[in-house]
Amino acid sequence: MRIGALPNVTSQRTDNLRARTRGAKAVPSICCYCAVGCATLAHVDDGGKLLNVEGDPESPISGGHLCPKGAALFGLTVNTARWTTVKYRAPYAERWEERPLEWAMDRIAGLVKETRERTFVKERDGKRVNHTLGIASLGGATFGIEENYLLGKLMRSLGVVSIENQARI
Ligand code: SF4
Image 1 (spheres, helix red, strand yellow):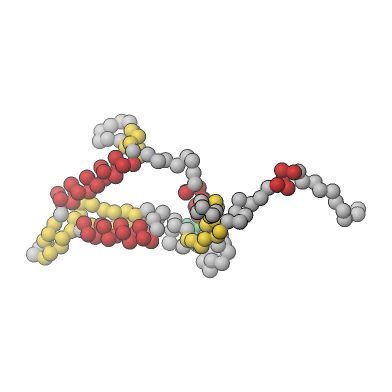
Image 2 (cartoon, rainbow, N blue to C red):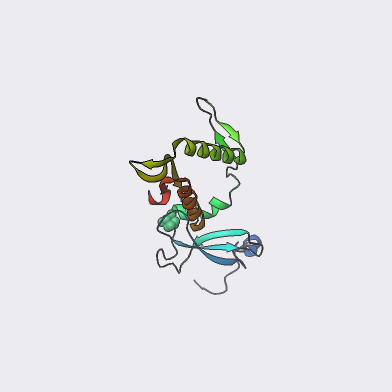
């Protein structure tokens, strides 16, 4: 069989296809999910719109690989199915209600304030403790470094001593 001038077997549509990262800027980043810290490349267009996230082949930790969770990073950010409201079930209620995020933030802030005022202890066994055992904080693994820093600061300023993060569990 003669190998040589083969006819073009691709369609016009295939010929016109372009990678969605073509011309995009690759910004080095790190997977936010766990303490392994696999490096990623986040591709963005001129307007800063996120186009793609993939493993960074230069990473000494993962060599460009991501586990299934890390491989889904793009969908974490760009996802039309993502919830933008809060599901709330009132005490003793049987049904979930949909509430705006702002409502949930105000409710959480109110409950934290009320719980801290009710449970704050200044002294125990003659020693200054200035803490509350009525509140615990569990940070999410999708937090960035700055968010974790701020959360830790906020919780310690309230006297919370039970501070943990999902990435460590
Ligand atoms: S890609 Fe997987 S193993 Fe790597 S940091 Fe993300 S969650 Fe952890």
